[in-house]
Length: 99
Length: 473
Image (cartoon, rainbow over all chains, first blue to last red; front, side, top):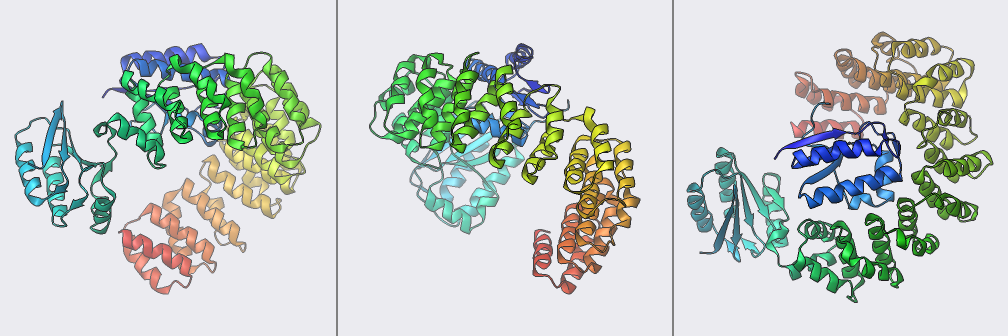
């Protein structure tokens, strides 16, 4: 299955939500599996999380798989607090590709 | 025939009847020979509550045969009794075993909602394959009297993003069971149902912490420009638990107002527990002054707050504060310098920082010395000479940390050093660390070395570590 990894920037928030949304949607259109790497993410807010949920809904409609990977403990804590860890597939990237 | 073969693309699914014999496997293997381009064979044992012990070796043979054709063998839906036999015969380590929900009917699938081990995966499977049949079943369950079935039906509808059931999910905010309320709250957040926000606020005061947390998180997800001010009122409560979840919700909202409220709370004094939560929360605001606030917290009277501030400075990669922190380390000693040094170890990756810390070492107090040794290992610039000089230090913590940092920076020097320490150091904790480093590095001839060391080692803990490594070889 073809796949791609999208590396997020430091910010997953209101400042750049439309930018990362476009990047991920492009990947979903072209790949059966999209991994979103959080390795660089430092700042995250509700805007970023809301966009991620929208993207997940879109990927389900397209019958594509979406994985979140390389989450630092603090980011994972936020995913757990919001229970989004039950909505998203979260794992280390088994198809880790170079940046 | 006691099995049925279903083939779809490169995947072959074999449904077994109530038992699996050597004869079945031989027949199966012959049939599989006829197929070309198989990538995966799923042997479904859901109806099979018994297998003969001699079948085990046949399964291994089948796996080998399929491997030769570049195909995988997976046993699915293995019965508990069969699983036990596989554990006894050690087959469990050689064969992939998975749950395959596609073998179950809708009614069978929802029974998994009552099984704590499989409820989440069953819900994920239904959400992934959501169709009219599943929708009908979930709608039925939303009115079921069993709260567990109801809870998982709500979550499944949320995972499937089925907005047509929103009115029914909203009704479940009035349910008497906490977990049903929680599922409804979460799902309303996932489905971005802003209309429900006002009804979710009272759950912040729920006696069940996970319900209150879900309410806080969902309010944050559904928030607009007025919610920070509304949530601020909950910061005044004497209930620390409610304060904590409110702080986290405000940090997620991450607007100017919420920042102001959290900063005020941090400045105006609060207890240690809340201050730790605030320190982390404030680090998620990308404002120029955030790093300065965290730097100030390195001097907090609570060591736990200082530690949280140091971790936050590392997390936000406060590189522009490196010089400021180094100057602080130069002027001061004690716990402040300890946490500042830890922060430098996580933020800096340049030779300047390593040289600075190495030069500061002699004048540093005991705990700062340990922090310096750890920090140079984390910075990543090779200073093997400095570290090697401390492998014989009289303080065992320094010897141990020097070896750990050396192993991060220069494996060629760390390996012989670890061997020497394992044979000669007087402290078992230092020897244990040396053993761990050697086991990780696996230098040539190390099995013989471990065997030799095992014979003379006196500490049970170290012996156990070595024996475990030898057994794995």
